[in-house]
Image (cartoon, rainbow, N blue to C red; front, side, top):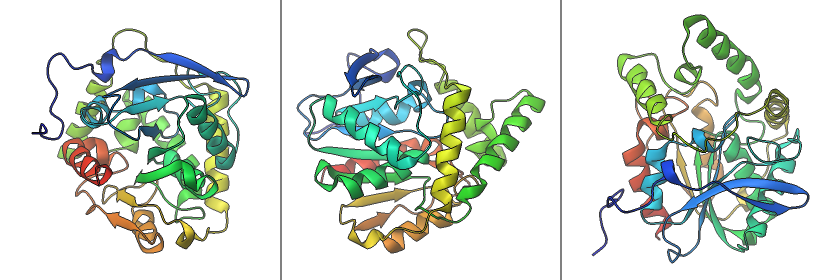
Length: 290
């Protein structure tokens, strides 16, 4: 009998203790971590958000997924501990992500893309459809989506708010300002500190600027024809995402022919999957197991 979703024995490795490894391909040393059972079938590759490195994944999400699936997190080109220069387009980031996946020897993967990572996942699935089995898109939107060109302004605004109030800007970017939203933000930020050793390098200013450029270009692109993307897709977001407005998740649900929408998490923002990590992990594992 399989254990319930998220079950983990005390002897099972957890993301906090996962070894940081490197693999070289196309002139880049990609930093990555992996955990979870080797015999669980198709691995799940996580594609993270703007300015994120390995230590910005919520350990409750990674550990919950890795209880049943092989999970791989990585820093793309020029990000965190990975070498090279971060490109200024989503398409180039997708190329680098595929290079990393192939370097690990995988010819079939599932993808979980959060925010900018969701942009990258869409491009990978369109350009390398045979590589991808299933996709989870969280807090993201299509090319040319509503409000995506405002990401730079909102990000810089929240960074300034964080500096003035001596708070982490993710408190403003990822969570609502309600009492429960603020508490969820504090809990999330506390979880990010659980890893005490071998922590990743913070994103550089150069990489951050390149990512902002890529996101702005994505927001200005003509909408892609998503009707040709036949992969099963699970969509999740909070109902109050102000960074990549929640309307984009509903737009994707309408335009992707084989998608299913998790009801938008109430009183949740861009970090809705972190605020509701237990529900998200359970629904994701069910989706991936089909």
